[in-house]
Length: 177
Image (cartoon, rainbow, N blue to C red; front, side, top):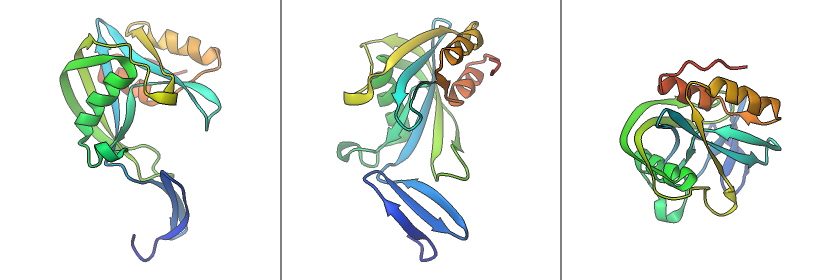
């Protein structure tokens, strides 16, 4: 840690730091963050799970952390993307493209997400995540995604903006509400 950075607090997974009038969070013990825009048969594959910090169910693209466990230490982000897609949705993809890397919340965290496009999907398991995740998988028509997302929002769910990035990467112009 550079000398000018002060640690304000540290938990099991996240450290809060400050320097030059800024405060931000750093995720510890990970080698990357991934998000996957995955499509099968004209449908985007989305996940839904309760997110405690938001106290709401959130619609998301499959996503997760690389290298966040002892057995995955130093894990490559593409391997993590493949693992997370399978764990969360039960799909494997024949074709993978790393689209870009970009910051998630530029004033709040040091996280940079590696966004992948996955196509040629094959369902090989139920998905649903690991342990406490309790993930619901949604297969949503690319043509009707904007309408479906609006319905989910009206029902009180939140939509992660990465969903709209995923739709863009899959060639769909979905309008946000």
